[in-house]
Image (cartoon, rainbow, N blue to C red):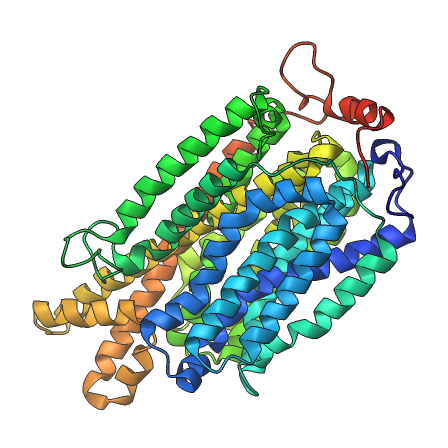
Amino acid sequence: MPENAVPENPARASPADRRAWWGLVAISLGVSLVVVDFTIVNVVMPPIIDDLELSAFGAQWIQESYAIVLAALLLVMGRLSDILGARRLFMVGTVVFGLASVAAAVSPTGELLIAGRIAQGVGGAIVMPTSLALLNLTFRGPDRGKAFAVWGSTIGAAAAVGPLLGGRLADYSWRWAFGINIAVVVLILVGVMRFLRPSLRRPGRIDAGGAVASVLGLGLLAFALIEGRNYGWWEPRKDFGPFGDGTGLSVVPVSLIVAVVCLALFLFLQVRRTRGNGTAPLMDTSLFAIKSFSTGNLATLVIALAEFGMLAVLPLWLQYALGYSPLRTGLLVFVVAVGSFFASGASFGMAERIGPLGLVRIGLALEAAGLPVFGLLADRDSQWWVIAIALFLYGMGVGFATARITDVVLADVPPWQAGQGSGIQSAARQLGSALGIAVLTSTFFTALASDLSHRLVRLGTPGATADQLSSAVSDSAGAMISGLGNDPRTASAADAARDAMSHAVRISGWTCAALLVLGMLATFLVPRPGQGTRQRGGRQPAEAASNAAIDAGRLHT
């Protein structure tokens, strides 16, 4: 199709052809790259530390700079998707991610590796909202529900594939964890150019003031949530610039305050500009008049609180309490991916009978059924097959819930606002994940340190020494347990640490299950299909409005 042609009205399109489904494969590969690089680094970090002689601070920022940058840029990239076209920007993001992966793979120093990870975060922030916008524009009706199901299950599966891939690549070189991305990037670009049509564009300018406020607000909020445990939620545990022992105040509360101010300013600007005062808004707040969009994003945030937190702590327990190798840990966590894809395939035949909201609730029920297995049975003698059953149930729940919630959120968003809507939905998911990981890791490590201290005291260890040792085990994320076990003098302390870590997993399992129940309740705020259009009287339903807009020729490729 020529670049200046007007595409077929997607709201009236016929069922997707084979080219569109191959395009979905390319989109899913792009999403997989972004998600895998969240989790793969956790497994290959030890050899990175040894090879580049990293400090704890450097290792921490290799892991977390990626997530912070990605969260900060999601809304901006969603708006750019509408202005420049989703397909074009998706390809740009894929190229940026690929070049950043090359830079990371060949980095001779920790500083350059961190720079590569920051650039990967920029590429990921482009890919995530544009991938959703492409799906929203390419598929309609039942086909769109299927496409969103594949997209959502890809997220859950890719998060589980990361540890497996990292465990395997760690046997060769940590650099392959980044270098392998290049081949996938080439496949994605070929697939997008071959199978996806040029996307709708809505010429306009970016809201510079809103962009700065959103980037600072979201970036600082993500930083505070991710780094709270490391730097201290109020009293400083480590120095960060001028904040620390000298001021008696951690950088985290300062970041939270500045984030709230920036986000409040951002919302003020967006409401003002949505009403027609000056520059077009970065985030059209009239989207929140669509009830399925506003309540669906609330449900997305709450669900994300629970879904990714457990995957952050589970590999630590498997490796340091149960003694699994990185590869065996990856294989077991991969069961989540198996369950996710199984449920995604099953959902195709169930969607028309039950509806997307029904599938989301079934998924949350399955996740909530799997997590109490850890709450009830986790100990240092847990059998792998019991863990596998729980993870399969959990994965099936992710395949139903995560896959279909996106369809619910974007169902009534007009095509010319697909990028903005996708950026908001991606931001809700990302912030929910960051908050969930913050809550779950804080719960996990607090429970670990407290329980271990009590166990050590019962073994006859002096109270001050018990507190010091339990804090050291917690700060190492359990990595020092194997060292304690190798010394006969501290073998009993190692056993106590394994038991305490199992106790922490039980607490985390129940916490996640409770959050999932909260997510289930949030879904009852979401209207049924056909009732999620704009609430303002006299306004057209979203799809009718999109038809009118396209027919009037307001959209261009």
